[in-house]
Length: 421
Image (cartoon, rainbow, N blue to C red; front, side, top):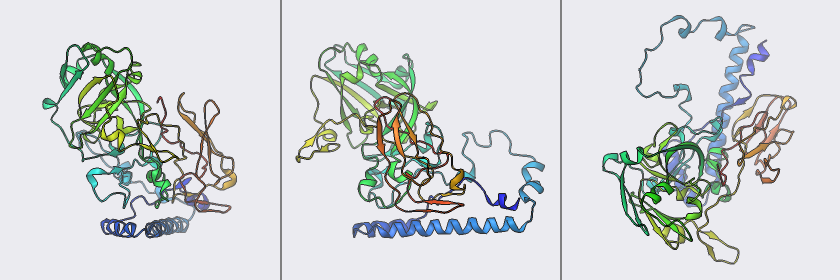
């Protein structure tokens, strides 16, 4: 029985926050010198420390004999009175899950107001990302805007320019839909020889939420817009970065583009554009303009800075391709992620691929642990092959996986960006 007690779970958690403030400053300095081994070594040391702690815990349990103290000794919650209702007006996760957080990649950018925080994909279940863990991408920092003073203007090639308050928008017929959003730079850390081998840092600029709002086509119709022919919409945000993006009318006519004020059953979070943001399914996240304040209808693309200078694709011939919008399918096994330890014997591993709704991807790991996983869509087309593990060490009783793409007994699939979530 003591042997079974040592098996504390199929996956031993990885150290998530292994650098303190001074360590982050050191990473900035080392990254400036082109040295990435520093952060790799810090991560490896943290993993070793976690393994040592778990080993000591297992030895303590073994010394206790055949009885498990967690069962034999009644805990306080079985003998005492618990907390009253409304201890917190807004519920929070357990203190034992405090390590599940969004995190900024050390050394990514020296300016926190123009940076990214990554969602902890390896710690999430299902497809919905909790609002508090939704990844962030800011160009000038986030704001908590007074909704009573926020306005949405609709102008340009319309018969009757309109100005909407948030209350007026919320009185219009609304829709709620689940959509994925992915930053155009997601997985870019891998392209640049990623320093931190976890799914959070390699694929964490990806989240899924239920968004609630008004179809943009409804507002354009109210303003008397001519929706036929080649038309384009300019979406403008209210933050200091003057984020502006061109949206083709072909995407808007379907009714899928939303002016959203709700996320996961509540109002948008300030980091996600409160009180209004644009939702453009299947299009890279930069087009989901936050703090939305103006919609202008025109007859040609607007050539804004964030679509002609930034967010362009460098082609083989040296030219830049502009107005790239639709994102292709990506897949990754999110657990075990880098630094996690498989405690189940490899011979007992039984991969169980998770089925996803039409339009998303299904990850089906190969039958042998620690081999790269190959993902296929429902149509059977190969979406992509996960990168090979950087370091794998397999034994009869446990498997150490140092890459987020390693196969697992019961993998969770990534929140895959699709052309229609």
